[in-house]
Length: 502
Image 1 (cartoon, rainbow, N blue to C red):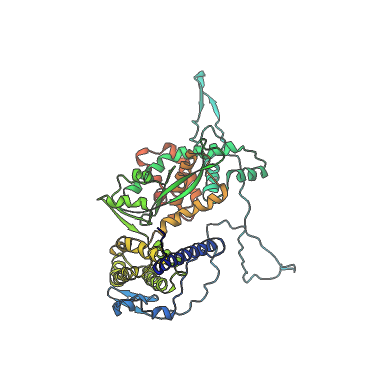
Image 2 (cartoon, one colour):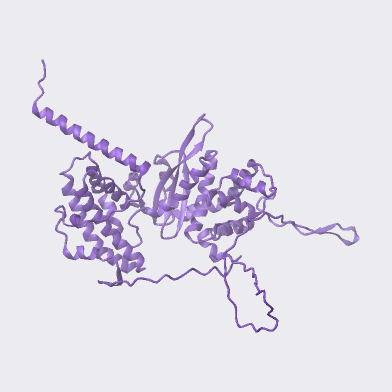
């Protein structure tokens, strides 16, 4: 029996084709943006967007509140605005006092023997000379005891790696150059050659490996300290790893990153895969609040009674930003609401509000926006195609709106997961330089160094000074007091402060 194609069938085919074309056009636009476009996601609202009929009947008080972005003073229940006068340029920042001063006096060519000095003009310029290698010569005199009772000699000082040629400063510099300044070991090897010192690549890798062996107890202490906290950000990032079982190609491993924006520390854990086994094992004893993106692996933690999952507002916003080509009107309204929420966070940061003031501001201004915005998305979703870009953006946020709104209930929470993503950036830069880890063990050592050196950065600690002093002390430091050497405690337990004067 021959089937007759009706007008309804043609209409259905036409609608499906239009949807498919729209999806492909959006995918093509995203690919072009990745290759040729800006990475920024700025959105400038227009008057027409403000007047759109998509908005709900949000209370006038809430709307007025989110427009206040330049408030000069916040009192618990009142926000006042003021025009900030243009700031004058403060001029060049003075050079740090702790830097060595080498004085160069320039005298006039004329005879000054009979002249009286009435002052001087001082100009300071910042100069540099390349770091240099030197030999630390350790001499221990030997003395013959009287009466032939033997020889007297001082005991050898503790060295980080007794059988290695490198001292603690060189071990620290090699490590910092690679994991902070992203200088691969083979480039460091060439730099040493310019100074007449030939070190094999294997020697440098052994130095880094030996350094990691020494600070492994610190890494474990940082892990234990991190997991005792009650609020963490979590994210993951890939790393290519050489695998002897995969000839001619690299293995795609992952760094799972746990960050505390309150305590200012970060912990990296390497796992061969992106499944939930890694975070499930690491966080098995964790209790508290876990902020993540929308990756489905983290949904497992929603089932645990002792963990409350928060989601990332920046990820939700990004989907509406990418949906502008599909539905400019709905996307523009959504982006305006996100901008209002972020304006509140900017006010909190710029005015350095207390915990109580920050929470009150969120409750008064952010909560009404979250409620009305969530209701608007539900009403608009039923009028869109679920598989369209705007439909996916609405569906993503609607499904997670409870987790996206929790941040407004406590001032210590962040509106998004950006703190942990900022901690991941050094890994992305490093990947472009050293390309891959030499083995799964090397990837785990990298996780260790990214953890400790990243925590140095978050606490304003010079990573070279911290690592050098830690290598000098760790061999004799009591294991039950190992947390004293963690970067966040470093300036409280050593004389090497942030000013780097040691």
